Image: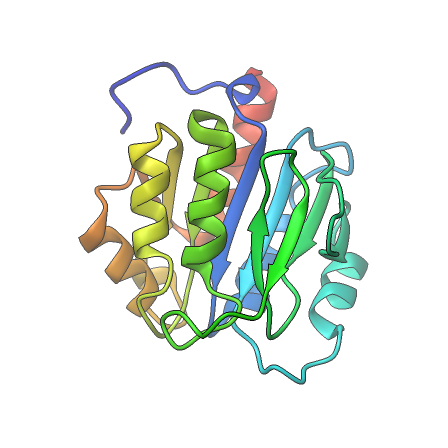
Length: 198
């Protein structure tokens, strides 16, 4: 549990989520409970093959109430929208709350890397950011989540026993003492609870 300021919905502006193996089903579980008028931006990085098509965005958009789309270069980040990092590009958040893309080398064997977007988001949003690590098969995201924590943001990790692959949650818990470790089913309801209290 957090022992600093009270957690309220109005404290936050954006959510960043990192996932890998098993991520599509985990993301669907979380996003499907969020309303169409959810008042935060949601930014997702999921490891996938560089030549993948837009199936992830399309399937989540069809199954969730929020608008889900691939993030575009120089696009302004808006509330109530779920943005997904495009394959084979690192996604970064600029100071003016727009996206930029990079083709620099892989980080933690991945491009896009969870660490890259988490670290840039922490620089921009600081304590108004929520960082979430979900199921996955490597350690990507643990250092980015640490940076979010150091910047005063809220940190959440999926409980490893509810993850399809526990490596990413376990690495995040080891690297960061997260504010919350929640079962997959409870993450979405926790975010809704923040909204109802806001």
